[in-house]
Length: 159
Image (cartoon, rainbow, N blue to C red):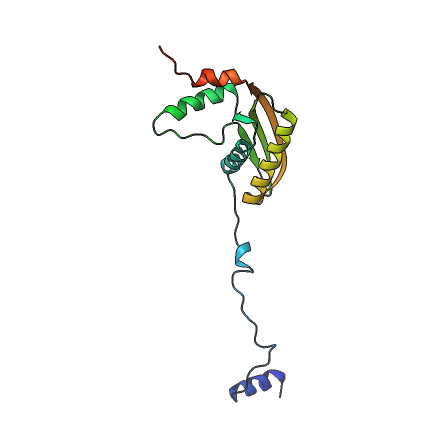
């Protein structure tokens, strides 16, 4: 008798099939966590980086003078929301991202220390939340906020 006939014969007699004959059918191609792709929009990374940068002591605001002016107007409009991504530009790839930040520093703080702290905070937040590798964080200091300038901004204007 051939091997195939013997196997059929034993299975018909009620005995179990040899282990080699029983193969588990695996559907879907592996671990469920690896099925499919996750894409992260530039705006998501920009928001994460913007919030992380604002958390650093010594960062007064984000963005250039013009974007801050438009942001202040938008914040006062009913229903308008504060833009946490103002002053942040992200380029997101499949596994890496690069960020450009424009910040306003409080007067009297060390710019290099604040820039270092911003980089560390932004890299930690973006990598932890997105899983992307942050290859660079470029920081442009566009202004220094003087103490007397804050008081002028808070005073109401009478027209």
